[in-house]
Amino acid sequence: MVGPQMTLSGASGARDEQARHEQRQGILQFVVVSNSIVERPSEETLITLIGLKNVFAHQLPRMPREYITRLVLCPKHRSLALVKNKTVIGGICFRMFPRQGFSEIVFCAVSSNEQVKGYGTHLMNHLKDYHIRHGVHTFLTYADEFAIGYFKKQGFRKEVHLAKTNYLGFIKDYEGATLMECQLNSKIPYTELSVVIRHQKEVLKKLIKQQQDSIRRVQPGLTCFKQGVRQIPIGTIPGIWEAGWKPSSNDRVMEVDSSVSDLNTVVKQLHSELTSHSSAWPFQTPVDKAVAPDYYTFIKYPIDLQTIGSKVSMRQYTSLQLFIADVQRMCFNCRSYNDPATEYYQCANVLEAFFMARVREVVGST
Ligand code: COA
Image 1 (cartoon, protein in one colour):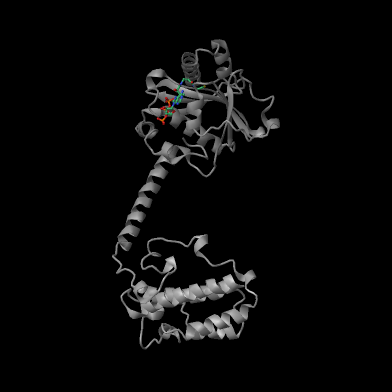
Image 2 (tube, rainbow, N blue to C red; image 1 turned 30 degrees about the horizontal axis):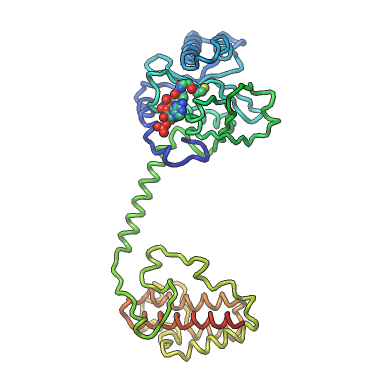
């Protein structure tokens, strides 16, 4: 299944693998042929066209033979032939309407002894690449009840997006059949798609393994509850960010600005409560490089209560959200740099828990 809305399961590489392998070995060939009234077609082209007509006639017994012969030999139609060991074993007959922006798939078949080997899929992929090269990005086809399943797997849908004015009067209407459409994506190399997806899967698996190996670390666990803390933000749990956790909208205290009546009074009050908290001592001033020489190598966005205080005085916090972000960053920096067993780390947890609880009270009371 290789249309723009494909599911990955259909393009796992299994279905068209044999066909691609046989093509590389020269066993299979895909050629576009058509009759011509301007110049005499080569004998090889005529043999291929007759081979195609025979395959279609065998595989589509409900279609009148004369009708198949007429369309296959019609110079306005082209056919993509699948040739195996010099014998035509399948093909797709189509008519391009470049000005109308689509191509009609008229017949599509693979000889019965060669079916379900992935040839039908690879054939359609070749047709897709061929059309992209010719600037046509939509296929239309009338599929009977037996063919709908196959076309669905090739990315066709019953919902037709092409404007009716583009195809009405151009495409043959088949009674009892369903009109299906496939939109092509010009960025996709369809004949290589399953290989590309397989490589992407392999790369993804490696990246996931790398990530898992890097976070396979046992954290010491939370002790702040023993110190009387009743609730802590999820983001303060050791290792949770490294494991890929992202705050959900419920975890954020974001959309609060409008409910805070006097922003500057509130941030001043909160800042004052923070600086006088018993766990605030590691955060009062910027980290001294003499004490922690590598601190500024690890921590790219340092912040501390003194700096936050200056920003409060200069009324730089135009929203409560910005103020909260600075305090959380301060605690996050501390936890990133220090080991969870250290007092610094515990202070960051306690102070942040206190701060977030106060923010909720303040927001709730306004
Ligand atoms: N209904 C539902 N699914 C079908 C199908 C059908 N009639 N024919 C094939 N499939 C499925 C295959 O099982 C396979 O699915 P999978 O990838 O999940 O395993 C997928 O479609 C493609 O199979 P593939 O081996 O690439 O196709 P093929 O070489 O067998 O060719 C046809 C498919 C339809 C061209 C071939 O079966 C055929 O010639 N049928 C008779 C003519 C016909 O009905 N033509 C279509 C209308 S013009």
